[in-house]
Length: 437
Figure 1: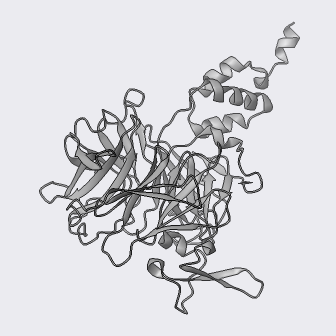
Figure 2: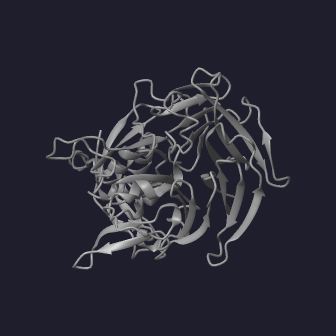
């Protein structure tokens, strides 16, 4: 009997204690756990149905370190070799190596997927912890403003680019990886591609254009363009089966894209709210209690940080914005905003966070005349306290880069579900990665 017990190893542990261990791990450790052996992987599968995953926010920053074998600093438009994932709650930092060329720009984060532009400036959905990659339609399918330039072997060597959605009419050829930062402002998903049909909506060209595509399709479809106006699309969100889009002037519209060939548009608010001259940026937020909220970031030179944040509820029946009290707008929760789909976290489960606060990554600023360098306090990742009206660094020890034109960071909520994707088997690719602490 003694010899029998001596032969048992770590792989022979029963599922119950293994699941208990998994419940204590963050996602990088949990994925390392499932890679140990078949029995631990089996326990991980069982845990997915019995243990709710921790939705801890991670800050994804594209690498700014010199490339291997080079003394030059990494530039925003160079193909990324790695990214830094920083945990807000416990200040852990992981360096996640991407396959070279698979991430030159970060354009969004939604339902556990990063939306990145690759070395050809094509958009892809990427799970950085499992290496699963799902391509979106190529950049050349934006035929109204992008024209591919091909080499002798039929390969893409560059693009001609028509700004503001215009047909290219210039001899200038842009490098294949340079438009990844310039073309895409923000991309949101209607849901997780792991669970069914998913629509991607993209704000492009400094907010002048909207395009959409179904994951797995071969081309993007044009949805809307703002022409001959100082206005621009500021933010978009998927809420109650529709995409809602707000402009810098405060105009709010929605689109039902369930039938791709027949998009249904509805104008919710047709007139500006008078805040355009002072607006720094705007966000739309789908709250967990069912309301659609608008977050307005306004220049206020009476504040120490020159920033004031106000929150309105979008009353879809009366088609009006209803101002909310700063102390009640978020119902005691913390919200994470930026190029990601909004994420709410309860303070009861994450006591390290601050209630009624918004954690911002640097926005893609369009109204630079309003929020110029003389006023700009938004360097890095910030937390805004709605009640105190203060703007402070989110990481006490520092952290976060700052790009006034092209943001290089995004909040990301990972998920274990993507370890075994069930969608588009002919489209996705599994790529090896390296995670180091």
